Image (cartoon, rainbow, N blue to C red; front, top):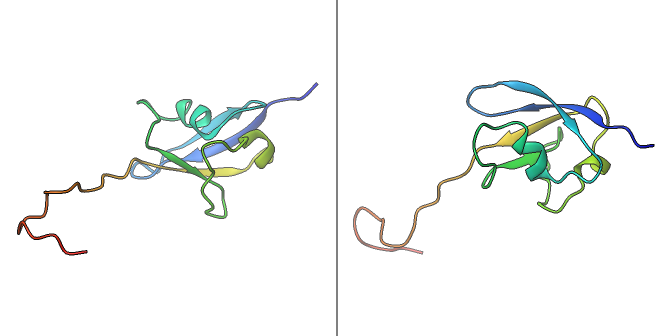
Length: 90
C-alpha cells in the first residue's frame, strides 16, 4: 500500500507556508487546489531547487516526504493594443 506524502507549500506575497498532503497520481493543479483559496489555474508549482513542474508531472513521484515546494501566482501578461504610446515594438 502506497502512503501519502506530506510536503510544505510556500505561496508568494503572503509568505504563507501550508502543510499539504500529496496523494499518488497528484498533478501540480491538485496540490495547488489544496493550497490556494481560488481556482488554481494560472498558478505554477516549483520544486525546492526552483524547477517548475510541468502540468502533467506526477508530483507524488517527484517529491519526497517533507519536501518544501513553492507556488507562483498567476502572471498577468499584456495583450496587443495595450501599449500606452500605441506603438508596438518587437
